[in-house]
Image (cartoon, rainbow, N blue to C red; front, side):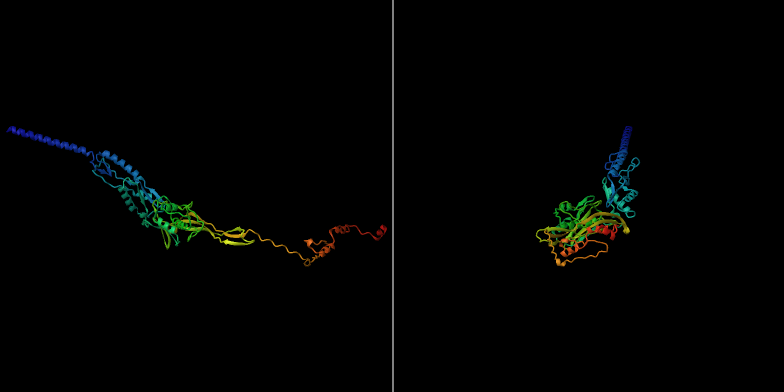
Length: 452
């Protein structure tokens, strides 16, 4: 009986020791596991499974710095752009030495003060009080958390009061119908053509890209003039422009443009950070060209100044086929024109913000052409003089003055006139009269008698 009790005590003691060893081992294992995160644990979007809290803290800080450097946030409006400072992206990084969460998934946020300051740096317009900043902040945070380590670019137009539309007609031009097969082909090909942001647009290259034949002439000048007028009434920058030799159909001076297959082209540059669309339609009603894009905060107006009318000059051509002295106007000239196109940017209350010179449009005058004979008309022979028609001219001279009559043509004078000339005293006799007047007195009778 006593031996049985001793065996029971021994078994019980061994069982207690075994159970205690199990608890101690389990406690040691739990302490070891407590210093490492389980596989699949993410903190602030970073995988930290298998890392200790200190190691996870270092990895989190490293990942956050890399994310701020790669995930830039930019805001753009038309042709202006600003980048938020890296400090504006606030990433939640817990202190893992104190807190040891199993899973932490907190979203990144945007500092609203830095966001407001960045909006104030947009140069396109005065945006103070116009931007829905809370809505904009929410959209930025959504894109930042959904697309980590990816740059985020936000267009401000949808968040500006009064500019909620994504796209609208910025400018349009209508031209009356002109019968032309090529004009219809060009309009159909360029309908919906996209002007890429920060890229140039060439009308000649766009037509070639759409497999269209570029043939200079009245139709292409009309099409180029419509595109030119539409794009000029926007914030696009003019790079190349040429005036036509003749004003296109239904086009006012100042709005004409010319493109041909050689050296002439029409080129604009799109400075915006968003694309624009060119819509062109042609029907029996005429040609319609429209430019679609984000609505502008300001209005653009086209103004024609320095308009000038140039009168045609006269050009003379000579021909052997015309008889002597004949001439005829064979071609009527046409007036030329010149004008300067300006673009004005007008803000609220019609306040002029800026005036920009776009181009000088010049259409040369066509001269009047007159054709003349190379042979001159012979001059008529002079008629012979008749003696009976000539009469002597007698001039009464003052007393004491002796002047011979002057006959312009003594050879053609009559004999009577020559006789009258001989009866007049000549200048050779004048010294004799002068000698009698020099102070010598006439001799007396006695002196004459003595001399005799």
